[in-house]
Image (cartoon, rainbow, N blue to C red):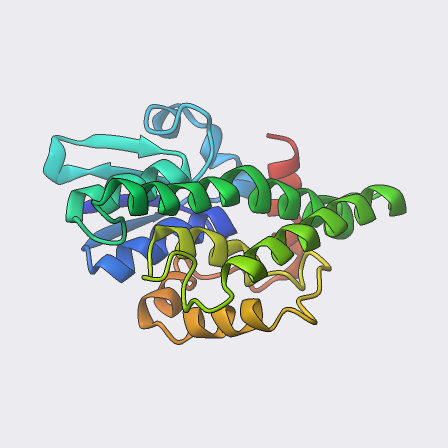
Length: 220
């Protein structure tokens, strides 16, 4: 059994998607970001950086893992799925996972901040992050040429990137003219585990709650 501590964010969805794709049983602990629950001592013992997601593996003497990319690798290695054992293929998957961790996530995250939440609208800043996100999308477009998934077979690299790229419109970034990327997005939506994972935990329906959650993340 896995204890999952998460919230309705792209990084949070990465953890729930991989758990559902792997069919691992887990107990959900929804963290209310707007209430600052991610900074409370009990959670900091699990996730020292005070960010979601985090997991506790009760089958491994309560071993805890924080950072979404590390969670994906840990669960893939635990089950022997979604991460190839061949050194070269394994490296390729990890490379595209790091592409999301170091590029897609930070750039789209900043686009979200300045496009959606920052009170002062700064056009040059907004365009800088939106343009860089779009450039990264073109990199994915090229990698997906002739491939169903990023490294041929479905892997944690697809989960990590899709959890962010699927929300491109929220970042104000178009996927027009990127047929491979659009096809891949739809392919991922057709996977039951992916669909289930993006509903964990349920998204806030109230717009004020969404704004408060975003503002709390800006203050972290």
